[in-house]
Length: 107
Length: 120
Image 1 (cartoon, chains in turn orange, blue):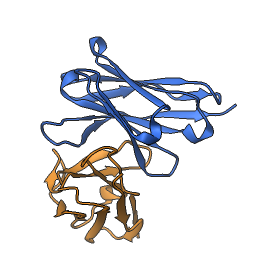
Image 2 (cartoon, one colour):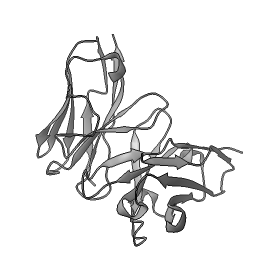
Image 3 (cartoon, each protein chain N blue to C red):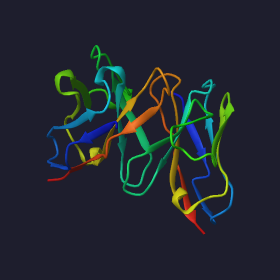
Image 4 (cartoon, chains in turn brown, purple):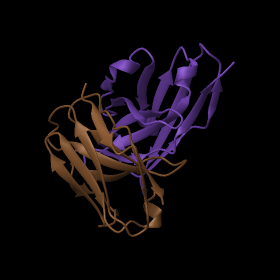
């Protein structure tokens, strides 16, 4: 199985700051990677697919990058509604494992 | 508007089984694969498995083989997941999520989650 290592596990930031979350796969996943946002008590929502493509309705302050085994989600000028948890997930063969998650909190 | 509406919370006894439903609307049911994801309290997400509603073909995470069974009812555009031989380790929120394999190849739409509590 492909393992997804996500970092950091938690992050305390202020509104307006820029944050980067990374995800490392245990083998090449050829950009078959998605990012999700989950708010407390809610279901996850798709942010980015195929490593770099924003899902419909996702603000342009979000961006995804990476290739091979290393991927990142960047959030520019953090807004209050961006706080919550973020997860990566690969789609290069089953099982489609998720990263351990990053909890983004307000400083 | 695509909607995935899951059945309500379940309180079940150890050793019992439970069947969760996920009723879809707003898209052609057979055009997206359906997946199920487990989230234990305060923890990350685990992919349980997926099913192709068009032909009933399934793929399971080895960890959940024998634990979960995925089925669909095309006539009602509803997906089901049955969990058997439940233990406290199965207490979690379970999500259904649809994947458009021709476009995003990711889990585009999610149900609201079904809480399963295993307790005597």
